[in-house]
Amino acid sequence: MHIALFGATGGTGRQILAQALAQGHRITALARDPGRLDPRDGLTTRGGDVRDPAAVATCIAGADAVICALGSHGHQEPIEARGTAHILTAMPAAGVRRLVVVSSLGVGDSRAQIAWPFRLIMDLLLKQILAAKAEQERLVMASGLDWVIVRPGGLTDGPRTGHYRYGTDPTLRSGRIARADVAEFVLRQLTDDTFLRQTPAVT
Image 1: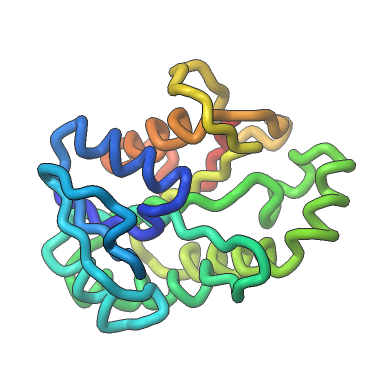
Image 2: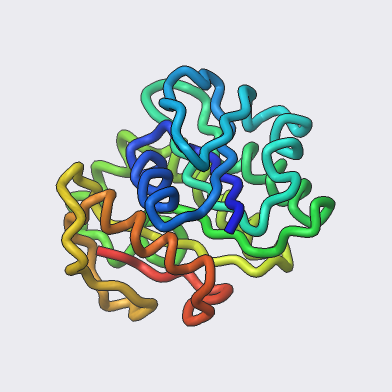
């Protein structure tokens, strides 16, 4: 497939990029600093900002599917909702319907799946980012596209194991999971309709 990837320079995005290329997919990635992505076969890097509608549209043109792994850090203005809004506008114009979004456990109706001490920490330290992710999810759910929102638990940089839990059961509790395992699950959602228009947790 030809995949438009947003958030390719982040921890999870890099894992998605590497595994997608290994599987033979072609990737077009939008990055504010293209130099952060090493050239490799199958990868086209577009310089630009996800807050720029024209840059987003250029990245999506000709794609078969879109993966959105946008993430905000530190004190920067959260980009999840604003960037995703531009993606959702560009996709129908380009004739692209499949969208896989990486969100987080603790967002929306998955709040109870996070242990209360971590809910408190998230409320204190990540309030703006969680609000942006909640708005991102709301926009995606209202889009009418063929979407899957993946909600991972606590992310680590460990190797891919292939051993993790996933699903929409609200009793599935958050735990640690390698970004590499999240990437594996995300890529499966490109062609698997099991969780179409659903919000599976992966942990």
